[in-house]
Image (cartoon, rainbow, N blue to C red; front, side, top):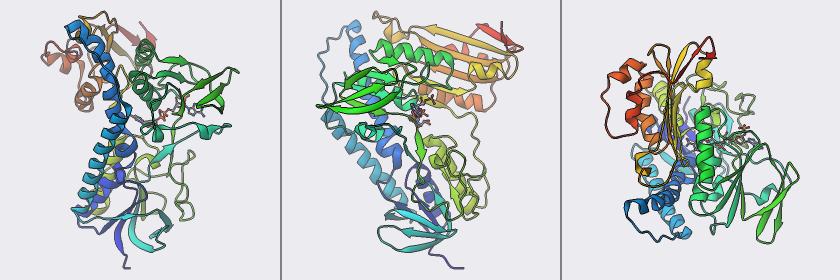
Length: 457
Ligand code: NDP
């Protein structure tokens, strides 16, 4: 049977773009359909602008300690300058992504797509019906907003980058990556910042020392954290939004932002009518090769709910193209994914947390807490935390958790050793680089404490 294309990709984000480019490189006739901007969440309103804004926010700490090195800084901040500079950069990246697609011959179709069957796609605005041997769903996820009265008065990370002006105060609901990263950004830029979280400590699922360390770091930077509370309703009060909490307290804020998780983008895609099965969480159900319950339809990235991280979507897109268009079946290994939280202080983590490792067998835990060298001339007392978790008696490294300057960069590199199965002995054999924070990882002498039979000793 003849098809218009070998592959139609729906969604030009990280996973879709990689899959389309690779498939075209292998000789496939490929179209990619995108209703918004090429680049997806990561480039347009996620990782990239977020990190740029984190850099902007971090100048506050730098200006603070600069004085201890003899500098006198008289600083002020201009929000429109940052927003315009960010826009220029993401537009540059958007063009680079589009040209990287066009070079191997991918056709970019600016429209919204709907799946009409195992090989059919309808362009919603244009009305055209297209056919393809394979369809790849790479539509990502969108912010979830709790269903409360006045929810429409709040914003999400989608709007936070382009606020017309910097608010005098912000209330951020949630305790995950986005809540703590945006709290870092707004507090660093001088906004009175409050996090409200339904749990009892931010970053559920992370190592306990990282959670407590970040909580202390955010608090030290003026972020107020309210636990075991949710927003029950929002109402407009003049230019402000008044939030009423689950404990009955009300307070006005310049902006209220929901960072309460993200949901797969499947509405109106026609997946279920095409026979594509979903998981109980509403993600597209896929096997290890990203194939859905309809053999000609695959899905990668956030829409599959496996790990909502850009590099994972990219890898899934690449391996899909290898499997389907290069006769080289590859499965993505979703274990041992290094991840960073670009908060202040920063977190880098790979492998098991202490609580997880303790239930896996006998383990040793090495922990070091020290003032980062750049702070030692100032009166800042904040500690860097470096934690290494190994199988007992200098065995395999099971987890590394870092909090402080450079944690993300360090974890990417130590992640190589961890994924190669490095042991404590391998780390010890490595000569330290002095003076650095990373040298702590190769100079631990004896365990700080251990777990034997699941008990801390
Ligand atoms: P997360 O899942 O990390 O956090 C969502 C937070 O919202 C949790 O604290 C959750 O509480 C809370 N929450 C969920 N539902 C409700 C509700 N109905 N009422 C009140 N609170 C609620 O999602 P994020 O939105 O922070 O980020 C989405 C994903 O994007 C992340 O999981 C991550 O994979 C990715 N991301 C990665 C980044 C990075 O790599 N640096 C940066 C930003 C995002 P509870 O803990 O109790 O479930």
